[in-house]
Image 1: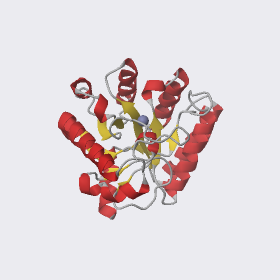
Image 2 (image 1 turned 90 degrees about the horizontal axis):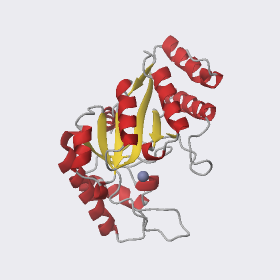
Image 3 (image 1 turned 180 degrees about the horizontal axis):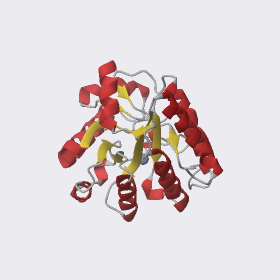
Image 4 (image 1 turned 30 degrees about the vertical axis):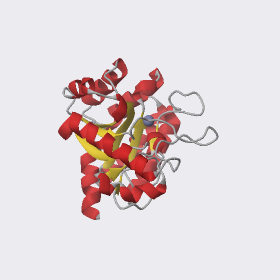
Length: 253
Ligand SMILES: [Zn+2]
């Protein structure tokens, strides 16, 4: 299927799925959208070409009707709520956090409620009441209040912790934030995806791919194109819309 040997483990894993008659499940979350940009066009065109549904975590305080107009032409895109302003409230010696314990909880919840209503007003049925905390961090004490302000789901990064609402986490981040700040090594990403596929096969969560279109280098775009080419046109794999995952989680509760 592909001449690059670093992709072979994924090709092999998909072949195993085919033999087992069980589809591998993937979903895609892309963070930090605000406005239409050439990078956003590239993401929407690429995902559209392969019919891959994409969940865009949009920063409410920064965005307006321009993004609505662009997404009207991209029915495969869904909008989630990326905090309020993607503003750090943690001291300089701590990890960045907008939704931490550095402010009164009412202030944080007010921000989040405002973000949800702003994006729902703008995007209507294209918006889904899922919170994607900036930097994938939220104070654990706030999670139990998300339902009361209208959220149906939460998405951070890594293995999900028990919560009173649907938790649909991303688990494979394509960017090398602490090293090159470009795409991670493709072979290592393939290994991470295959490991998550095997975890999912044993009852774990689907592969949740995390991307950041505004900072992709060419290697990141190439990785996505190859991944979609290998996965999106085979019976052994399906890319799920976020609503399917939230609905499934609600049915289980
Ligand atoms: Zn972000």
